[in-house]
Length: 312
Image (cartoon, rainbow, N blue to C red):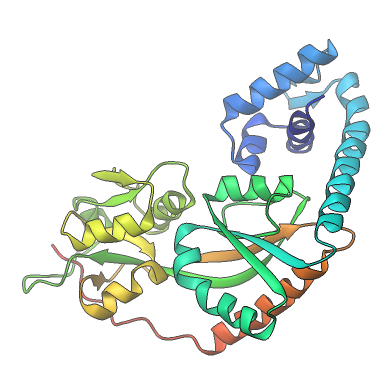
């Protein structure tokens, strides 16, 4: 049996819903349904029963829960043992991060770690949130830095590393900038955003909903926050982005920060790692040192630049 199918099965069994399981796993609902169909075909029996009370486990499904947990626990233990053996001669940590986090937030603390602990070898991989979480589960990376989006499964642990404001940015300020009275007026402006499914798009949509308005349809969708910032700088529209992605451009005057018509919208940046009985020495050291760096980051936080009025 495919371990990935078993893991999905346990999520569905716990949620009693294909939709909620798909949301937790960051998968399309059709992918979850297809996996469960393959598992049922392989076993030759139905695992779920739909009723007025919702999705229920059949007797076969109930019988599969404990063995599936045991199989996945054994696989995790085997993966941990191999990883520990591979790293026994060195303290090596593979870090996964979103593009903006890797380029704007991590360089300084990672450089400090290397200076203080030259024996600690670091590798950084850049990917999207769903891919990073899957790499964590598979043991391909040791720790990931992702903006929070829903609950994590019991296989992963997380700690808040930072909170980052989402800010409204536009081209360099013009003399005719004027305040907009309500968020609905903002929807008439051209916005650029990341593609649907990306965590940054999720943050964009949630910020609009918190402001009491449905998110507008972007005039352009890009796969990179850096590219979005440059597109705004070129005058192609406006964007809602984590402040750290635009801080340098704002300081230079290449962008303008405008007031968002609601209290500050904040994104939570998590440091996430796999639950293990014993953490590899390098990872344990890294987690402790990055927690210290997080405390220093909080103590040394810089106030954001004063926001300009929203353009009309």
